Length: 247
Image (cartoon, rainbow, N blue to C red):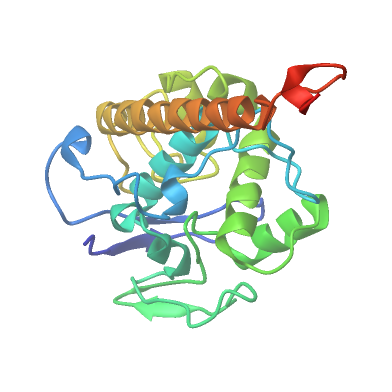
């Protein structure tokens, strides 16, 4: 379990997902952080196939490449929680929201700092209001938060880079103004706060992407098998006169 520690908060006029950084207290390399097993229903292993019908009312398809980046943002922001959906309930300071019906919009005081950031991607209230106006998601559940985070990635003109399946220093820098835990090209936080090293983010991303691509391939294989079974005739095709039709 990841324990969260708050650092400096800043209130900005521009809309950003989080201006308060959470740094996991658990040491170790990103690549060794355990992921949930494929048998779990954790959203961190949930991807969509291009051949599947998109969810009605949701603008973004969650590919392995996009999910890997979402997972990495959660890791950087301190809401990874082992990949479990519990991370979608995290508020500033490490407390958990009782409900995901709406953004809590609640300022939490911790030590000398205060913030209203909440959710897996630590949305500030004004940022979440902008997300809802822009893409029309409802509530504050995991699906809505995922869609909101991808919208912010697109808003930073970083989605084409994200879709290449390669977390580069440039991609991290494009996201640094949105998530203070991501490093700029100089390796520091855009807001002068504690920041995750790019090498750790890169390692975590690669582990996540490899597992997600395996999940995608397994689902694609299962879908193909199901279609093949459905296509098989249930019995002989009868066009009399023939002994197959009892004639």
